[in-house]
Amino acid sequence: MRVTTLAIVGVGLLGGSIALAARRRQLAARVVGVDHPSACAQALRLELIDEAVELGGAAATADLLVFCTPVDCLAAQILAAAPWCRAGCLLTDVGSTKAEIVRSVEDRLPPGVTFVGSHPLAGSEKNGSEHARAALFHRRQVIVTPTPRTDAVSLERVTTFWQALGATVRMMDPEAHDRALALTSHLPHLAASALAGVLPPELFSLTATGFRDTTRLAASNPALWSAILHANAAAVLEALARYSEQLHRFRAALEAKDRAALETLLGQGKQNKDALSDS
Image (cartoon, rainbow, N blue to C red; front, side, top):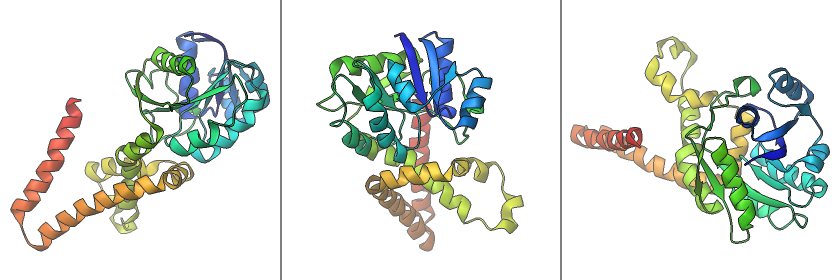
């Protein structure tokens, strides 16, 4: 897939990586960025984008707009850009939650302008375009979330775009996506933050690889992740209930001094972790 003008709204880690990958793979003749002036200036210095523009200017000229901003901003930004878009313009995003965004946007676009939700399972606890990598999406999975109303041609265009960046694409219903990601992404961030949060300062010097690896996700942007957890609160609460039940099993085994039960629970975790390593 090759487009004349690709617009990236939000040129941080994900947006910058999309821009860099598209340039390296020659998927767009021109890449423009929309962001705060300092972020755009950095993206220009790093040669991630050709030009910094306002949202309306990007929408008026782009064939494809990719929105890479926090989930609590996405729907409003998409709707603000849509009236400026030409017929045939395609909009997508990288939001970690999908159902609310799709519901807010799908029925409110001008004729000829389409939106297909996307979520690349790639990224890091780091932020900013200085961490952008052209290979960020290589062999990584991107979830695309069509609905019965999604235009088939637009769905194919979005799929082809992500595949051209080196990703594999999986289709999921927006609500099913949010339930799944609550367990596989949102709960781990919450758990890492909770674990880091209970450590008293006098014990900081006693942490080693285990604690630091387990709490790596706690270094993520709090504003970004509070928006994600809030947007997907119902599914995250369900995931948190499952996690609490498992912690209760560990607590019960410890209180009963039941070493066999502890070994069984630890074995279940190891079995699942080993299966992840093989997939």
